Length: 170
Image 1: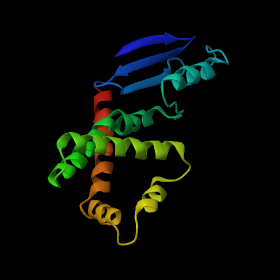
Image 2 (image 1 turned 135 degrees about the horizontal axis):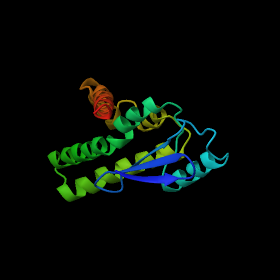
Image 3 (image 1 turned 180 degrees about the vertical axis):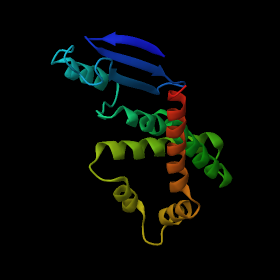
Image 4 (image 1 turned 90 degrees about the vertical axis):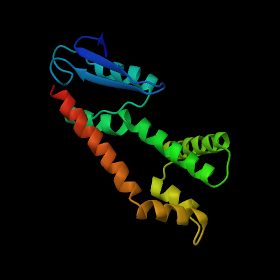
């Protein structure tokens, strides 16, 4: 972990995760826990501007939530890689060449992520839009639900969050 001083009392801890492009930034004021008497009025906006330049910047308000962020977005790329791998394996099982399967799976995830980020629709609405009555997509999504996909992902995020909390106590 690299630590950088920023402004008066703000500490930016940068945690690099490999492989790129995954980068987690933890920003916290060192004294007091929120921008306080030693900080300039513009420090919060400056930190937010710097962080927004490298990715999504969210104000949480409670440091305890940072472990949940670790479980969700810090460990999240591995979950997505597993999803891509599983989708590609499904393509191979059904006759597609591995390289084609991998490209199609990765492109599908990227497209779905872009639709989720750029739009104002909830992911369930986006999913419902591609689920035709009696069609292929609803056959696949009901199989994912029946085999515990949603619960497995939620449990993975929770397990990673709990491990982050444990590691924070060491």
